Image (cartoon, rainbow, N blue to C red; front, top):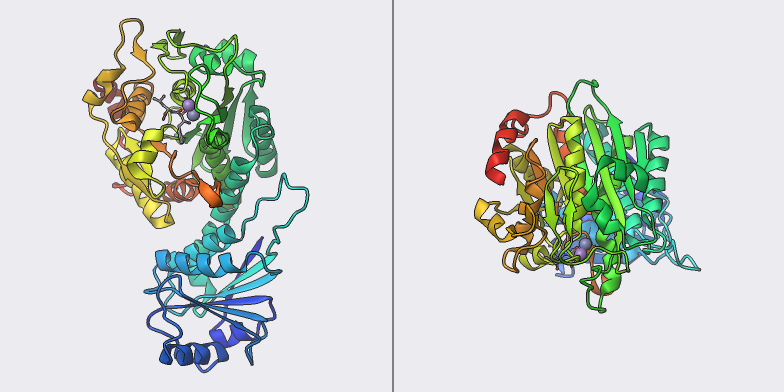
Length: 503
Ligand code: BES
Ligand code: MN
Ligand code: ZN
């Protein structure tokens, strides 16, 4: 989808030849003397239209409007969140129509947050999955013009960032939606290589032999039950001097999670194809980096494999030796995400990172705790936590900080290894994070549990592309000269000292 930003008032927008015009209307209304403003004034007077977010007024062949369809969308106070709701309702309603050219007109009061929300929500609401359908019934919008009455230069930066972000979100969504017999570990590796080639990233895709040489005994144990060979993907984006410590993103790439020997029940097991959404969000974020080229260094690490039952699968009681040297007793083979992430977190040490953020559909418990509204955020560093939370707020891709008190780690004690891979049922998302924290002591670290936010179930079943919006916003905020004292992660040395406390 092509996006462009233009300076138009509503009278100009009415003259644009296109298939549909979406006019976003706020509470402070429309005083203009163009056909759409008059329509709004009229409909308001008669009580047929309210500017509440999500309210629509649709019209066909309005006199003086070049577009065949006009959709007037209420956006309340005009904040990013309200504009998001307006655009979702309006563009979502146009999805199955033959719309090639779309104009979205923002009101004069629109700020950068409204511009960002409009771009991302337009892309999001017009996405249609067609990859594995024999007939492509999704009709793609080809070109979107976003119009603002003010000079475009004022909004250029926000617009460009949003456009790059939207491309990243779409990329993650598409990968997440692909079936597990297509989106295999090998395919994820190929996608990473393709991205690297297109945007000039460094990329290494390691296979079973190299991973064995690295001593990733925990990751290897998960992959052992599958015929699909594992992949360990290392992507590197350089936007600043080599000497600058990178941010490392680690994405859980379980391309199908059956639970393994601790097999899951059959209902909804298909949804476990989305268990690579963390990996997809890292790849989607790199897609956005390729477009936006911010001034910082970023490394992406993806351990990718399937979790299946087999004669060679790991089994409850097995003790694994992780790359860190810590031994792990497997008490439940369905707690596999932490087993592949822990080795990736150890691998991350070699980059001497300024911060490491892992992203994982890690626990059903996080779905129970936070549902689909906010991702779970766990962090060993307050500044990193604050920066991620602020990025989520700005991108309308929310998260919520969860605790990491040492007492939560007590349930991971075992007589047979340094640590067990599960504790009891209480606080399941916290104990999973406590497990990861043992492997992330050498740098400021945060963990996003996206089990509730990465996809939707039910009739709207599908990947959401979250938390690409949050991650891109966070990385943009960490550019040279941008990170403020409050958003910079605390120095790694301090995090190192925290390691002892984490154990
Ligand atoms: N991929 C799942 C987590 C999950 C479950 C995400 C449901 C979304 C919806 C993860 O690998 C898993 O199976 N976790 C277990 C952990 C348990 C065995 C301690 C869980 O949450 O049940
Ligand atoms: Mn599992
Ligand atoms: Zn899983």
